[in-house]
Length: 189
Image (cartoon, rainbow, N blue to C red):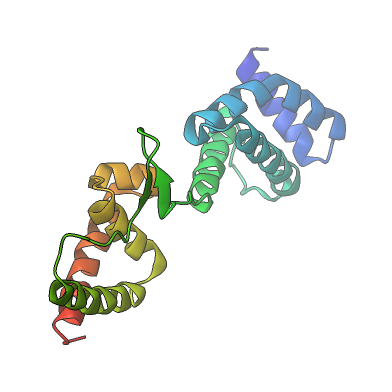
């Protein structure tokens, strides 16, 4: 009996609620499934959590499979990959508004231009308040995408990586948010 057949046999026994089979299955495939989850998440602790979820799923749902549906290593890999992708989507990185640059200087997104005249500062402050109000009217994730693009100068691809979102989603959020901001600043929206 080859490895593939042994795994399918263990999965069939797990469907019959055989705890020893679940333990044997874990020892046989856990390393491979952990590698799948780690490739998606790039975080071993989170990948281990995903692996635990997968084996809970196997234990709870293998008996409820459709007639003729074979449970295989490929099925386990797909379940693991999907759970890892779900975990990556739930993980939301924090983006600081204050940071220290490479030279050790503290940076802030809302820096005031001290070389401007009093009138220029007043107009800029008024526009800044309106822009702040318009930005606050956006949903949280699209607002963050716009702020990363314009205050940190990140590309769509870099924003997608930082926010763990698909590139198309970032592009759509940025475009729609800019249109809403333009309307808001012109007093339309």
